[in-house]
Image 1 (cartoon, one colour):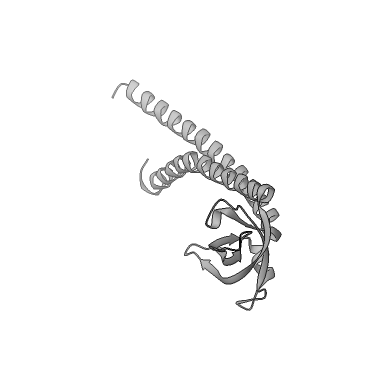
Image 2 (cartoon, helix red, strand yellow):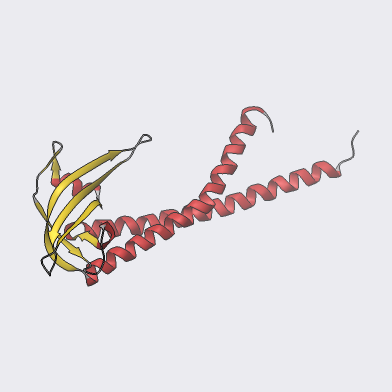
Length: 171
């Protein structure tokens, strides 16, 4: 193959390989995050956290993510913080209006023995986070299946084509 068709075929081959590796990786990471959310919701201590700030990040190729910085006192009265806690788009639209926070505090659940953003879940956003993780598991698994089957088929067809070309005698 030459020209534009060869170029497109090469790009498709690499996309299939990336999907074959990246899809299962994305599914695993989403499963792991979903398990983290379930653990914090089941075992966490509920309290009110003050919202210290919020960040909206726009990526170059599209897509926007939202995070909040939280501070609270734990059961022993010690100050705790969690920076860059991810929130869903739906929840962000409820607490941010005209680029300003509309809430001062949020109900959270946290794991007392752990530090950082991975030990905190915003109670009102936990269901949306779990739903997103669940959807990303299926999306990653689907991409992996398409990538594995597509790559296998692509390389199998390419191998057969090169075998038939070498078997034919030259004129």
